[in-house]
Length: 87
Image (cartoon, rainbow, N blue to C red; front, side, top):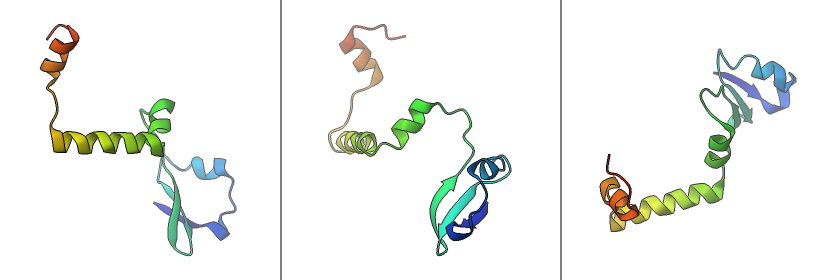
């Protein structure tokens, strides 16, 4: 992992990105991390977009909380409810 203080970050984004296969680049401000450049493997744009969308993350957390408190439905029961094959 390479730490770069934002005030001293003079390389281009392309230069920082070219080293990501070797190590992540963490941008800091007064020693505190504020951003990270990391290599992405086997990820599509939709996944990145959803995983950084606060509204989507809130929806998932709300759903998980509801499942914990109220329980859920098995995939077998859901398939039956939707009239789908159980295999």
